[in-house]
Length: 144
Image (cartoon, rainbow, N blue to C red):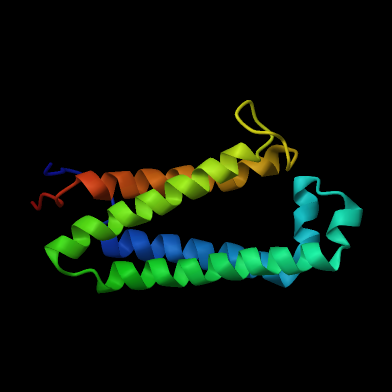
């Protein structure tokens, strides 16, 4: 489908998503496992060396994903790459969105993480998934 809009193209979308992921992950890595206090994780869990290690791994993973997404969006220049990169990223983000919703403090979640902050990852993931849905079905921007 030929799209008539002002939404960002693949390159800019991937650069923005990558930057957001790097900034979020970097901020949480600087704060350490204590950042999970915003999600009502019990203090004894946060104090665990195993939990601190797991959270470090998760947010280093998110930082690396942000860098990879930005790189993929920059390097995808052929029509085939511009068609398949957003589809692959959409599939990945739908899995992450499912995991974020599943653990949120919402009607669809199990409230593993409590409070309004538990919805933030799902909201970010939902917006990113929608951007990749758009890029998966849009052939390009009409100029003019």
